Amino acid sequence: MPMQAPTTDLFYTAFTHSSVGMAVVGLDGRWIEVNPALCRILGYGRDELLALGIREISHPDDLPADLPLLNRVLAGEIDSYNLEKRYRHADGRLVCGMLTVSLSRDARGAPECLIAQLLDVTEQKRAVEERDAFFALSPDLMAIAGNDGYLRQVNPVWTDTLGWTQDELTTQPFIHFVHPDDAAGTLREADKIYSGGVAKGFRNRYRHARGGYRWLEWSTRAVGDGLLYCSVRDVTSQIENEERLRSQEQKISLLIENANDAFLGMTEQGVITEWNKQAEATFGWSAREAIGRPMADLITPPRMRQRHHDGVEAFLRKGMVAASRKRVEVPALRKDGSEILVEITVGVVPFGGERYFHAFMRDVSEQRRMSEELHYRATHDFLTGLPNRYEFMGRLQHAIDATGRESRPLVLLFIDLDGFKAVNDLCGHEVGDAVLIAFGRRLAASVRRTDEVARLAGDEFVVLLDHLHDPCQDAALVVDKILHAAGQPYPEIGGRTEPGATIGMALHRVGDSADRLLSRADAAMYVAKNAGKGSGKSCAAYERDGRWVVRGA
Picture (cartoon, one colour):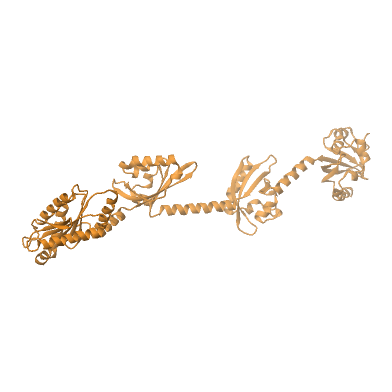
Protein backbone atom coordinates (compact mmCIF):
# COMPACT_ATOMS: atom_id res chain seq x y z
CA MET A 1 0.00 0.00 0.00
CA PRO A 2 1.52 3.33 -0.93
CA MET A 3 2.14 5.88 1.77
CA GLN A 4 -0.30 8.79 1.92
CA ALA A 5 1.95 11.59 3.14
CA PRO A 6 4.64 12.69 3.21
CA THR A 7 5.80 10.68 0.22
CA THR A 8 8.93 10.75 -1.87
CA ASP A 9 10.79 7.96 -3.53
CA LEU A 10 13.85 8.65 -1.35
CA PHE A 11 11.88 8.50 1.90
CA TYR A 12 10.04 5.37 0.84
CA THR A 13 13.28 3.57 0.00
CA ALA A 14 14.87 4.48 3.31
CA PHE A 15 11.67 3.62 5.15
CA THR A 16 11.39 0.21 3.56
CA HIS A 17 14.99 -0.91 3.88
CA SER A 18 15.90 0.56 7.28
CA SER A 19 17.05 -1.91 9.94
CA VAL A 20 15.38 0.32 12.51
CA GLY A 21 11.66 -0.17 13.06
CA MET A 22 9.79 2.80 11.60
CA ALA A 23 6.17 3.85 11.42
CA VAL A 24 4.08 6.75 10.14
CA VAL A 25 1.40 7.49 12.73
CA GLY A 26 -1.60 9.67 12.28
CA LEU A 27 -2.37 12.53 14.61
CA ASP A 28 -5.18 10.37 15.98
CA GLY A 29 -2.59 7.83 17.17
CA ARG A 30 -3.35 5.11 14.59
CA TRP A 31 -0.85 3.48 12.27
CA ILE A 32 -0.62 4.87 8.74
CA GLU A 33 2.30 2.76 7.61
CA VAL A 34 4.87 0.43 9.19
CA ASN A 35 8.14 -0.84 7.74
CA PRO A 36 9.34 -4.47 7.62
CA ALA A 37 11.86 -3.89 10.43
CA LEU A 38 9.11 -2.84 12.85
CA CYS A 39 7.02 -5.88 11.86
CA ARG A 40 10.04 -8.11 12.52
CA ILE A 41 10.73 -6.49 15.91
CA LEU A 42 7.13 -6.91 17.11
CA GLY A 43 6.43 -10.25 15.36
CA TYR A 44 3.38 -9.16 13.38
CA GLY A 45 2.63 -9.11 9.72
CA ARG A 46 2.06 -5.66 8.18
CA ASP A 47 -1.68 -6.00 7.93
CA GLU A 48 -1.92 -7.46 11.46
CA LEU A 49 0.04 -4.58 12.90
CA LEU A 50 -1.95 -1.92 11.00
CA ALA A 51 -5.11 -3.45 12.38
CA LEU A 52 -3.91 -3.03 15.98
CA GLY A 53 -3.92 0.17 17.92
CA ILE A 54 -0.67 1.42 19.44
CA ARG A 55 -2.19 1.19 22.91
CA GLU A 56 -3.00 -2.50 22.35
CA ILE A 57 0.62 -3.51 21.87
CA SER A 58 2.14 -1.08 24.42
CA HIS A 59 2.85 -2.15 27.98
CA PRO A 60 0.22 -0.38 30.08
CA ASP A 61 2.76 0.72 32.67
CA ASP A 62 4.66 2.71 30.03
CA LEU A 63 1.71 4.65 28.60
CA PRO A 64 1.61 7.24 31.42
CA ALA A 65 5.10 8.33 30.43
CA ASP A 66 4.50 8.18 26.65
CA LEU A 67 1.21 10.06 26.25
CA PRO A 68 2.20 13.32 28.02
CA LEU A 69 5.27 13.57 25.79
CA LEU A 70 3.15 12.91 22.71
CA ASN A 71 0.74 15.65 23.73
CA ARG A 72 3.61 18.09 24.17
CA VAL A 73 4.81 17.32 20.63
CA LEU A 74 1.32 17.85 19.22
CA ALA A 75 1.07 21.10 21.19
CA GLY A 76 4.28 22.32 19.64
CA GLU A 77 6.11 22.48 22.99
CA ILE A 78 8.81 20.07 21.80
CA ASP A 79 9.84 18.82 18.38
CA SER A 80 10.53 15.22 19.41
CA TYR A 81 11.13 12.94 22.34
CA ASN A 82 13.01 9.75 23.23
CA LEU A 83 11.60 7.10 25.50
CA GLU A 84 12.49 3.57 26.52
CA LYS A 85 9.27 1.65 26.12
CA ARG A 86 8.03 -1.92 26.28
CA TYR A 87 5.80 -3.59 23.68
CA ARG A 88 4.01 -6.89 23.64
CA HIS A 89 5.35 -9.21 20.93
CA ALA A 90 3.01 -11.33 18.88
CA ASP A 91 4.17 -14.41 20.83
CA GLY A 92 3.37 -12.73 24.15
CA ARG A 93 6.85 -11.83 25.31
CA LEU A 94 7.92 -8.26 25.98
CA VAL A 95 10.13 -6.32 23.62
CA CYS A 96 12.08 -3.39 24.94
CA GLY A 97 12.70 -0.60 22.47
CA MET A 98 14.20 2.83 22.35
CA LEU A 99 11.39 4.97 20.85
CA THR A 100 12.01 8.27 19.05
CA VAL A 101 8.95 10.28 17.97
CA SER A 102 9.04 13.46 15.86
CA LEU A 103 6.33 15.57 14.21
CA SER A 104 6.13 16.04 10.44
CA ARG A 105 4.50 19.24 9.13
CA ASP A 106 3.06 20.09 5.72
CA ALA A 107 4.19 22.92 3.45
CA ARG A 108 2.10 25.36 5.45
CA GLY A 109 3.68 24.24 8.73
CA ALA A 110 0.59 22.48 9.99
CA PRO A 111 1.05 19.14 11.80
CA GLU A 112 0.70 16.38 9.27
CA CYS A 113 1.73 13.11 10.94
CA LEU A 114 4.12 11.52 13.45
CA ILE A 115 7.32 9.68 12.45
CA ALA A 116 8.17 6.95 14.97
CA GLN A 117 11.45 5.01 15.08
CA LEU A 118 11.96 1.99 17.32
CA LEU A 119 15.36 0.46 18.07
CA ASP A 120 15.15 -3.03 19.59
CA VAL A 121 17.22 -2.93 22.79
CA THR A 122 15.74 -6.08 24.34
CA GLU A 123 19.03 -7.97 24.42
CA GLN A 124 20.95 -4.97 25.69
CA LYS A 125 18.30 -4.44 28.33
CA ARG A 126 18.47 -8.09 29.34
CA ALA A 127 22.26 -7.87 29.57
CA VAL A 128 21.97 -4.79 31.76
CA GLU A 129 19.39 -6.48 33.97
CA GLU A 130 21.59 -9.57 34.30
CA ARG A 131 24.54 -7.36 35.10
CA ASP A 132 22.47 -5.49 37.66
CA ALA A 133 21.37 -8.80 39.19
CA PHE A 134 24.99 -9.89 39.34
CA PHE A 135 25.86 -6.55 40.92
CA ALA A 136 23.13 -6.96 43.52
CA LEU A 137 24.04 -10.55 44.42
CA SER A 138 27.82 -10.18 44.44
CA PRO A 139 29.43 -10.24 47.93
CA ASP A 140 32.12 -7.92 46.55
CA LEU A 141 31.82 -4.22 45.86
CA MET A 142 31.01 -3.94 42.14
CA ALA A 143 31.21 -0.66 40.24
CA ILE A 144 31.24 0.84 36.77
CA ALA A 145 33.20 4.07 36.42
CA GLY A 146 33.32 6.56 33.60
CA ASN A 147 36.34 8.37 32.24
CA ASP A 148 35.05 11.56 33.87
CA GLY A 149 36.16 10.46 37.36
CA TYR A 150 32.70 9.45 38.58
CA LEU A 151 31.29 6.07 39.50
CA ARG A 152 28.34 5.44 37.21
CA GLN A 153 26.91 2.47 39.02
CA VAL A 154 27.59 0.71 42.32
CA ASN A 155 25.96 -2.29 43.97
CA PRO A 156 24.37 -2.30 47.45
CA VAL A 157 27.50 -3.76 49.07
CA TRP A 158 29.12 -0.33 48.76
CA THR A 159 26.50 1.08 51.10
CA ASP A 160 26.85 -1.87 53.47
CA THR A 161 30.63 -1.44 53.54
CA LEU A 162 31.10 2.32 53.47
CA GLY A 163 27.77 3.71 54.68
CA TRP A 164 27.28 6.02 51.67
CA THR A 165 24.11 5.79 49.58
CA GLN A 166 24.41 4.92 45.91
CA ASP A 167 23.47 8.50 44.99
CA GLU A 168 26.19 9.90 47.25
CA LEU A 169 28.76 7.61 45.70
CA THR A 170 27.82 8.37 42.09
CA THR A 171 27.28 12.13 42.32
CA GLN A 172 30.74 13.04 43.60
CA PRO A 173 34.11 12.38 41.97
CA PHE A 174 35.41 9.11 43.38
CA ILE A 175 38.71 10.76 44.32
CA HIS A 176 36.83 12.75 46.98
CA PHE A 177 36.39 9.54 48.94
CA VAL A 178 40.04 8.47 48.70
CA HIS A 179 42.47 9.05 51.58
CA PRO A 180 44.66 12.09 50.81
CA ASP A 181 47.83 10.01 51.10
CA ASP A 182 46.49 7.58 48.48
CA ALA A 183 45.01 10.12 46.05
CA ALA A 184 48.05 10.62 43.81
CA GLY A 185 48.70 6.89 43.49
CA THR A 186 45.02 6.25 42.76
CA LEU A 187 44.96 8.79 39.94
CA ARG A 188 48.14 7.33 38.43
CA GLU A 189 46.61 3.88 38.55
CA ALA A 190 43.42 5.17 36.89
CA ASP A 191 45.42 6.80 34.07
CA LYS A 192 47.26 3.57 33.50
CA ILE A 193 43.96 1.67 33.20
CA TYR A 194 42.46 4.24 30.84
CA SER A 195 45.53 3.72 28.67
CA GLY A 196 44.69 0.04 28.30
CA GLY A 197 46.20 -1.41 31.43
CA VAL A 198 44.62 -3.74 33.97
CA ALA A 199 44.76 -3.24 37.71
CA LYS A 200 44.90 -6.29 39.95
CA GLY A 201 45.38 -6.01 43.69
CA PHE A 202 45.67 -2.20 43.80
CA ARG A 203 44.89 -0.99 47.31
CA ASN A 204 43.78 2.35 48.66
CA ARG A 205 41.76 3.74 51.55
CA TYR A 206 38.16 4.88 51.07
CA ARG A 207 36.42 7.19 53.50
CA HIS A 208 33.53 5.75 55.52
CA ALA A 209 30.35 7.78 55.98
CA ARG A 210 30.79 7.62 59.78
CA GLY A 211 34.44 8.65 59.64
CA GLY A 212 37.62 6.69 59.32
CA TYR A 213 38.75 4.73 56.30
CA ARG A 214 38.42 1.22 54.93
CA TRP A 215 41.09 -0.50 52.87
CA LEU A 216 39.82 -1.54 49.43
CA GLU A 217 41.54 -3.82 46.91
CA TRP A 218 40.68 -3.11 43.27
CA SER A 219 40.69 -5.30 40.19
CA THR A 220 39.82 -3.04 37.26
CA ARG A 221 39.94 -3.01 33.49
CA ALA A 222 38.73 -0.65 30.77
CA VAL A 223 36.21 -1.75 28.15
CA GLY A 224 35.67 -0.42 24.66
CA ASP A 225 32.98 2.08 25.57
CA GLY A 226 35.35 4.04 27.81
CA LEU A 227 34.00 2.57 31.03
CA LEU A 228 35.94 0.94 33.82
CA TYR A 229 34.58 -2.29 35.28
CA CYS A 230 35.68 -2.66 38.87
CA SER A 231 35.58 -5.59 41.28
CA VAL A 232 36.50 -4.36 44.75
CA ARG A 233 37.02 -6.10 48.06
CA ASP A 234 37.11 -4.73 51.58
CA VAL A 235 40.49 -5.96 52.84
CA THR A 236 40.58 -3.86 56.02
CA SER A 237 40.54 -6.88 58.32
CA GLN A 238 43.17 -8.64 56.23
CA ILE A 239 45.47 -5.60 56.29
CA GLU A 240 44.91 -5.08 60.01
CA ASN A 241 45.74 -8.75 60.59
CA GLU A 242 48.80 -8.45 58.37
CA GLU A 243 49.84 -5.33 60.27
CA ARG A 244 49.36 -7.11 63.60
CA LEU A 245 51.36 -10.04 62.25
CA ARG A 246 54.11 -7.71 61.02
CA SER A 247 54.10 -5.92 64.35
CA GLN A 248 54.30 -9.25 66.17
CA GLU A 249 57.11 -10.38 63.89
CA GLN A 250 58.94 -7.11 64.51
CA LYS A 251 58.52 -7.54 68.25
CA ILE A 252 59.79 -11.11 68.07
CA SER A 253 62.66 -9.98 65.86
CA LEU A 254 63.54 -7.21 68.33
CA LEU A 255 63.29 -9.59 71.26
CA ILE A 256 65.55 -12.11 69.53
CA GLU A 257 67.95 -9.42 68.31
CA ASN A 258 68.29 -8.02 71.83
CA ALA A 259 68.02 -11.30 73.73
CA ASN A 260 70.56 -12.13 76.41
CA ASP A 261 71.18 -15.45 74.67
CA ALA A 262 72.93 -15.85 71.36
CA PHE A 263 70.43 -16.80 68.65
CA LEU A 264 71.16 -18.31 65.29
CA GLY A 265 68.96 -19.76 62.57
CA MET A 266 70.09 -22.32 60.02
CA THR A 267 68.86 -24.15 56.96
CA GLU A 268 68.76 -27.92 57.14
CA GLN A 269 72.11 -27.82 55.31
CA GLY A 270 73.52 -25.99 58.33
CA VAL A 271 73.97 -22.60 56.62
CA ILE A 272 73.45 -19.69 59.01
CA THR A 273 70.49 -17.42 58.17
CA GLU A 274 70.08 -15.44 61.43
CA TRP A 275 72.66 -14.17 63.88
CA ASN A 276 71.73 -11.72 66.65
CA LYS A 277 73.77 -9.17 68.58
CA GLN A 278 74.47 -11.52 71.47
CA ALA A 279 75.80 -14.09 69.00
CA GLU A 280 78.20 -11.41 67.78
CA ALA A 281 79.30 -10.71 71.36
CA THR A 282 79.55 -14.38 72.29
CA PHE A 283 81.46 -15.70 69.30
CA GLY A 284 83.16 -12.58 67.95
CA TRP A 285 81.76 -12.90 64.42
CA SER A 286 79.60 -10.09 63.07
CA ALA A 287 76.25 -10.94 61.45
CA ARG A 288 77.69 -9.94 58.07
CA GLU A 289 80.55 -12.42 58.56
CA ALA A 290 78.42 -15.24 59.95
CA ILE A 291 75.30 -15.29 57.76
CA GLY A 292 75.71 -17.53 54.76
CA ARG A 293 78.45 -19.66 56.30
CA PRO A 294 78.12 -23.22 57.63
CA MET A 295 77.58 -23.18 61.36
CA ALA A 296 79.85 -26.17 61.92
CA ASP A 297 82.82 -24.45 60.24
CA LEU A 298 82.25 -21.30 62.28
CA ILE A 299 81.73 -22.35 65.90
CA THR A 300 82.08 -26.13 66.16
CA PRO A 301 85.55 -27.22 67.36
CA PRO A 302 87.33 -29.29 64.65
CA ARG A 303 87.41 -32.43 66.82
CA MET A 304 83.62 -32.38 67.07
CA ARG A 305 82.60 -31.48 63.52
CA GLN A 306 82.19 -35.01 62.24
CA ARG A 307 80.08 -35.88 65.25
CA HIS A 308 77.96 -32.79 64.56
CA HIS A 309 77.45 -33.72 60.89
CA ASP A 310 76.53 -37.28 61.85
CA GLY A 311 74.00 -36.03 64.39
CA VAL A 312 72.30 -33.69 61.90
CA GLU A 313 72.20 -36.42 59.26
CA ALA A 314 70.63 -38.84 61.72
CA PHE A 315 68.04 -36.27 62.73
CA LEU A 316 67.07 -35.51 59.11
CA ARG A 317 66.82 -39.20 58.43
CA LYS A 318 64.56 -39.89 61.41
CA GLY A 319 62.44 -36.80 60.91
CA MET A 320 60.87 -34.33 63.29
CA VAL A 321 59.83 -36.97 65.80
CA ALA A 322 63.41 -36.94 67.00
CA ALA A 323 63.41 -33.19 67.65
CA SER A 324 64.48 -32.26 71.16
CA ARG A 325 64.45 -29.04 73.11
CA LYS A 326 66.70 -30.29 75.89
CA ARG A 327 69.38 -27.95 77.11
CA VAL A 328 72.80 -29.42 76.66
CA GLU A 329 76.29 -28.06 77.25
CA VAL A 330 78.83 -28.30 74.45
CA PRO A 331 82.15 -26.64 73.70
CA ALA A 332 82.09 -23.91 71.05
CA LEU A 333 84.73 -22.02 69.11
CA ARG A 334 85.17 -18.26 69.11
CA LYS A 335 86.59 -16.17 66.28
CA ASP A 336 89.88 -15.74 68.17
CA GLY A 337 90.28 -19.52 68.35
CA SER A 338 89.47 -19.84 72.04
CA GLU A 339 86.91 -22.34 73.25
CA ILE A 340 83.97 -21.62 75.49
CA LEU A 341 81.31 -23.81 77.02
CA VAL A 342 77.80 -23.00 75.80
CA GLU A 343 74.41 -24.17 76.95
CA ILE A 344 72.36 -24.77 73.81
CA THR A 345 68.71 -25.45 73.03
CA VAL A 346 67.95 -26.48 69.44
CA GLY A 347 64.53 -26.43 67.77
CA VAL A 348 63.28 -27.06 64.25
CA VAL A 349 60.32 -25.61 62.32
CA PRO A 350 58.96 -26.58 58.88
CA PHE A 351 58.63 -23.75 56.37
CA GLY A 352 58.11 -23.84 52.63
CA GLY A 353 58.72 -27.56 52.40
CA GLU A 354 62.04 -27.32 54.23
CA ARG A 355 63.13 -27.55 57.84
CA TYR A 356 64.84 -24.69 59.58
CA PHE A 357 66.87 -25.06 62.74
CA HIS A 358 67.12 -22.41 65.42
CA ALA A 359 69.33 -22.42 68.47
CA PHE A 360 69.62 -20.36 71.62
CA MET A 361 73.10 -20.42 73.12
CA ARG A 362 74.46 -19.04 76.34
CA ASP A 363 78.10 -18.81 77.33
CA VAL A 364 78.23 -20.74 80.61
CA SER A 365 82.03 -20.94 80.84
CA GLU A 366 82.23 -18.58 83.81
CA GLN A 367 79.11 -20.06 85.33
CA ARG A 368 80.56 -23.55 85.01
CA ARG A 369 83.90 -22.38 86.43
CA MET A 370 82.18 -20.79 89.42
CA SER A 371 79.96 -23.83 89.89
CA GLU A 372 82.94 -26.14 89.79
CA GLU A 373 84.82 -23.88 92.14
CA LEU A 374 81.92 -23.79 94.60
CA HIS A 375 81.57 -27.54 94.32
CA TYR A 376 85.29 -27.96 94.87
CA ARG A 377 85.17 -25.72 97.93
CA ALA A 378 82.21 -27.63 99.28
CA THR A 379 83.82 -31.02 98.77
CA HIS A 380 87.52 -30.36 99.40
CA ASP A 381 89.63 -29.28 102.30
CA PHE A 382 90.60 -25.65 101.80
CA LEU A 383 94.09 -26.21 103.24
CA THR A 384 95.37 -29.45 101.69
CA GLY A 385 93.14 -29.58 98.62
CA LEU A 386 92.17 -33.15 99.53
CA PRO A 387 88.52 -34.27 99.54
CA ASN A 388 86.82 -33.35 102.82
CA ARG A 389 84.78 -35.57 105.11
CA TYR A 390 81.49 -34.92 103.26
CA GLU A 391 82.93 -35.81 99.86
CA PHE A 392 84.90 -38.78 101.13
CA MET A 393 81.93 -40.36 102.90
CA GLY A 394 79.96 -40.20 99.67
CA ARG A 395 82.77 -41.84 97.73
CA LEU A 396 83.17 -44.46 100.46
CA GLN A 397 79.47 -45.35 100.36
CA HIS A 398 79.60 -45.52 96.56
CA ALA A 399 82.51 -47.97 96.75
CA ILE A 400 80.67 -50.07 99.33
CA ASP A 401 77.56 -50.15 97.12
CA ALA A 402 79.72 -51.29 94.19
CA THR A 403 80.85 -54.34 96.16
CA GLY A 404 77.25 -55.55 96.05
CA ARG A 405 77.46 -55.72 92.24
CA GLU A 406 81.09 -56.86 92.07
CA SER A 407 82.66 -58.64 95.03
CA ARG A 408 86.00 -57.07 95.86
CA PRO A 409 87.87 -56.14 99.05
CA LEU A 410 87.93 -52.63 100.49
CA VAL A 411 90.39 -51.48 103.15
CA LEU A 412 89.99 -48.21 105.04
CA LEU A 413 92.97 -46.56 106.73
CA PHE A 414 92.30 -44.00 109.50
CA ILE A 415 95.44 -41.89 110.07
CA ASP A 416 96.14 -39.56 112.94
CA LEU A 417 99.19 -37.27 112.85
CA ASP A 418 101.02 -37.82 116.17
CA GLY A 419 102.61 -34.84 117.91
CA PHE A 420 100.80 -32.31 115.79
CA LYS A 421 99.70 -30.29 118.85
CA ALA A 422 103.36 -29.78 119.77
CA VAL A 423 104.03 -28.46 116.28
CA ASN A 424 101.34 -25.82 116.70
CA ASP A 425 102.48 -24.95 120.24
CA LEU A 426 106.19 -24.72 119.42
CA CYS A 427 106.16 -23.46 115.87
CA GLY A 428 102.82 -21.71 115.45
CA HIS A 429 99.72 -22.44 113.41
CA GLU A 430 101.20 -21.31 110.09
CA VAL A 431 103.93 -23.97 110.43
CA GLY A 432 101.27 -26.41 111.58
CA ASP A 433 99.28 -25.68 108.37
CA ALA A 434 102.42 -26.20 106.30
CA VAL A 435 103.00 -29.59 107.98
CA LEU A 436 99.40 -30.64 107.23
CA ILE A 437 99.85 -29.65 103.59
CA ALA A 438 103.15 -31.52 103.35
CA PHE A 439 101.73 -34.62 105.01
CA GLY A 440 98.75 -34.59 102.67
CA ARG A 441 101.12 -34.59 99.69
CA ARG A 442 103.23 -37.41 101.19
CA LEU A 443 100.07 -39.38 101.84
CA ALA A 444 98.87 -39.00 98.26
CA ALA A 445 102.30 -39.98 96.96
CA SER A 446 102.27 -43.17 99.05
CA VAL A 447 99.16 -44.68 97.43
CA ARG A 448 97.93 -45.47 93.94
CA ARG A 449 96.12 -42.89 91.83
CA THR A 450 93.00 -45.02 92.04
CA ASP A 451 92.97 -44.91 95.86
CA GLU A 452 91.01 -42.24 97.71
CA VAL A 453 92.83 -39.86 100.10
CA ALA A 454 90.96 -37.31 102.27
CA ARG A 455 91.34 -35.08 105.29
CA LEU A 456 88.53 -35.60 107.77
CA ALA A 457 89.32 -32.81 110.22
CA GLY A 458 92.28 -31.36 112.14
CA ASP A 459 95.13 -33.88 111.92
CA GLU A 460 92.92 -36.82 110.86
CA PHE A 461 93.26 -38.30 107.38
CA VAL A 462 91.79 -41.37 105.67
CA VAL A 463 92.76 -43.57 102.75
CA LEU A 464 90.45 -45.98 100.92
CA LEU A 465 92.23 -48.86 99.21
CA ASP A 466 90.18 -50.56 96.48
CA HIS A 467 90.75 -53.43 94.06
CA LEU A 468 93.44 -55.14 96.19
CA HIS A 469 94.74 -58.55 95.17
CA ASP A 470 95.62 -59.60 98.72
CA PRO A 471 93.92 -57.11 101.04
CA CYS A 472 95.96 -57.78 104.17
CA GLN A 473 99.35 -58.01 102.49
CA ASP A 474 98.75 -55.16 100.03
CA ALA A 475 97.31 -52.90 102.73
CA ALA A 476 100.29 -53.66 105.02
CA LEU A 477 102.68 -52.49 102.30
CA VAL A 478 100.75 -49.24 101.94
CA VAL A 479 100.72 -48.76 105.71
CA ASP A 480 104.48 -49.19 105.86
CA LYS A 481 104.96 -46.60 103.11
CA ILE A 482 102.71 -44.12 104.90
CA LEU A 483 104.43 -44.62 108.26
CA HIS A 484 107.80 -44.19 106.59
CA ALA A 485 106.66 -41.03 104.78
CA ALA A 486 105.16 -39.61 107.97
CA GLY A 487 108.41 -40.15 109.89
CA GLN A 488 110.54 -38.15 107.49
CA PRO A 489 111.71 -34.72 108.77
CA TYR A 490 109.66 -31.64 107.93
CA PRO A 491 111.87 -28.69 106.91
CA GLU A 492 109.16 -26.31 108.09
CA ILE A 493 109.69 -27.44 111.72
CA GLY A 494 113.45 -27.08 111.68
CA GLY A 495 114.03 -30.03 114.04
CA ARG A 496 112.21 -28.53 116.98
CA THR A 497 109.87 -31.55 117.10
CA GLU A 498 109.13 -34.39 114.77
CA PRO A 499 105.55 -35.64 114.37
CA GLY A 500 104.71 -39.21 113.41
CA ALA A 501 101.56 -41.10 112.46
CA THR A 502 99.19 -43.67 113.85
CA ILE A 503 97.05 -45.78 111.52
CA GLY A 504 93.95 -47.78 112.14
CA MET A 505 93.07 -50.30 109.40
CA ALA A 506 89.65 -51.89 108.79
CA LEU A 507 88.65 -54.43 106.13
CA HIS A 508 85.14 -53.98 104.80
CA ARG A 509 82.69 -56.62 105.93
CA VAL A 510 79.38 -57.49 104.36
CA GLY A 511 76.75 -55.24 105.85
CA ASP A 512 79.13 -52.43 106.78
CA SER A 513 77.91 -48.94 106.02
CA ALA A 514 80.30 -46.07 105.40
CA ASP A 515 79.87 -44.83 108.97
CA ARG A 516 80.32 -48.31 110.41
CA LEU A 517 83.49 -48.97 108.44
CA LEU A 518 84.91 -45.57 109.45
CA SER A 519 84.07 -46.26 113.10
CA ARG A 520 85.92 -49.57 112.98
CA ALA A 521 88.99 -47.96 111.40
CA ASP A 522 88.86 -45.20 114.04
CA ALA A 523 88.77 -47.82 116.80
CA ALA A 524 91.78 -49.57 115.27
CA MET A 525 93.64 -46.24 115.17
CA TYR A 526 93.14 -45.80 118.92
CA VAL A 527 94.41 -49.33 119.54
CA ALA A 528 97.53 -48.44 117.58
CA LYS A 529 97.92 -45.13 119.41
CA ASN A 530 97.73 -46.85 122.81
CA ALA A 531 100.24 -49.44 121.67
CA GLY A 532 102.74 -46.78 120.65
CA LYS A 533 102.53 -44.64 123.78
CA GLY A 534 105.86 -44.27 125.52
CA SER A 535 107.76 -46.00 122.76
CA GLY A 536 107.91 -43.01 120.42
CA LYS A 537 107.13 -45.34 117.53
CA SER A 538 104.56 -44.85 114.80
CA CYS A 539 102.20 -47.79 114.84
CA ALA A 540 99.34 -49.30 112.92
CA ALA A 541 96.70 -51.72 114.13
CA TYR A 542 94.00 -53.88 112.56
CA GLU A 543 91.72 -56.65 113.70
CA ARG A 544 92.20 -60.22 112.47
CA ASP A 545 90.28 -63.24 113.64
CA GLY A 546 88.94 -61.32 116.60
CA ARG A 547 92.39 -60.16 117.79
CA TRP A 548 94.18 -56.85 117.33
CA VAL A 549 97.36 -56.91 115.35
CA VAL A 550 99.81 -54.00 115.82
CA ARG A 551 102.56 -53.08 113.38
CA GLY A 552 105.41 -50.72 114.28
CA ALA A 553 107.35 -48.46 111.98
